[in-house]
Length: 472
Ligand code: ADP
Image (tube, rainbow, N blue to C red; front, side, top):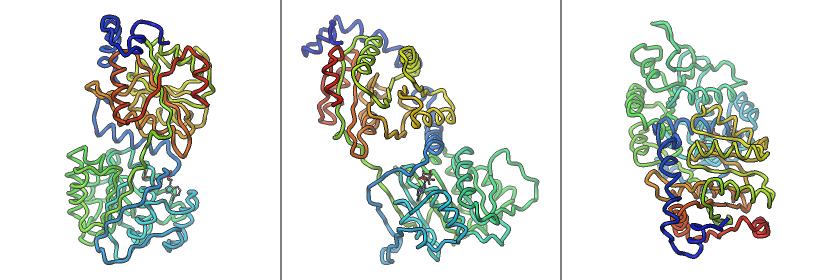
């Protein structure tokens, strides 16, 4: 591929400004500006986060593998720290133990080992817990709520607030599944659209909903007597705080609750603002954190290919596919338009291609990812935003059809690591191939290389032997 003017120029470490100048600009302004992915244009941080969170819930059916230690900060540092290795040790009600096993859980997850004994302790303890999504937080607080309700009392005893209607429904499903053998406990959704008659009192023991409706039901409409609440759960605090109104509403709900009500707050991330909010919601907390598993480039072989246009990049890709067997690959593009085009070209070449793109509904995206994970398609073409947070273990090759840049055009090192780091998981070796199509993108590549102090080797995709070697 590295045969023509600009590529050679870079090859010789010489910037032949004229020949490069003309081609570097041709595609980029339109690419960067016009139909950039949804993160850059229609960006609403709360919506993005909520959508990401929902996507994780819709596609993930396995616990996230995390080998880090749980960090614990106890309210009372002198009290012994309990952690459990089995659900039996928690002395759960038999109906709940049955529910837990029925869901296929054999033993508590990392975060659950420490969080569950704290949440089930007598007297109840407050908790702030942070761990990435997929580590078992929801299952943990659902179990705590189900354990604390008295089914003989026909009034709300547990409140759980979620940032969106869809997320509330997902948590509700977990409650229903885990409480399957405990039918005396009932659940109601405090969400807009669920209109109740004035003056009525709820009989369900667990109420799950969004902060605005929950506040109205506790305050204005008095469907719930907040003084009888024993457990208050605030889920997805980091998504919640992206909306100022939600923060205020949550705090107002919390203020109506009795002093001895157990307060539990969960978050996938823990920046300063989340922490400040958490402290206002949860007095005297125990705090537990589980750091995200570090991503590393150590087990990844990285290459770059020099090209002059997207057509050449596509040709390079075809050459790679012609030379080596690729079980499954993810290909990242900067814009929806390129992603759509590339998916079309690859399909024409006979590949089974899945396309993830920004305008798709979360449910559609989840369906695409599930099909890919099931191996129904071998290539996933995607823009960055859509693919964030997807762990596809069987992916052996990641291709950056466009290098990741931030909105100012600087290298997005974090995204690079996240895209590539996923291939080398669990001791497997991964392969990453970067397409470089201008002096600008060569510069980005060099900066990425410097940032990680890891060499990215040049690959000549016209040389079949050379491609074959990289796969060995
Ligand atoms: P989070 O709330 O941190 O995103 P979840 O509670 O939704 O995590 O759990 C992630 C996935 O792992 C879900 O599919 C859930 O059913 C499953 N899961 C949770 N706890 C366990 C466990 N102890 N053993 C096996 N799977 C679990």
